[in-house]
Length: 148
Image 1 (cartoon, helix red, strand yellow):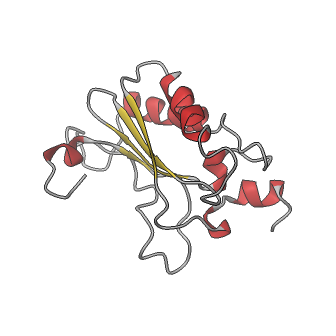
Image 2: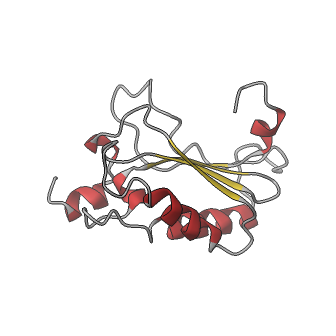
């Protein structure tokens, strides 16, 4: 979406992980999910907080079969937008463009998000800018992969 798109202001954004140092070129990483209709700007409604938790839980159920860590903790989920109608758009990447499950992983993410109660349409966009690198992994992923 562009800055001129009216719907952008109405969509909560779920932050999906750490931004590497010097990450000015990185996508927004977890500004608190908000809605324009929130009572206090920047404050999450209890309903949206519960939906956010459910979406994160669903994303954490999808694993890269070559790496014993879920796609969320790996930092492969760059952005999750939720519209007022509870339609969800996910921007994700892969550890490498030639990943053997490149055809399948977006569908796994879509199915996981779709399984969350109250979610409408789901769109998963595969993006490769900025490219993924290990600095996007959470501490949990680093421990699991013995990379601390």
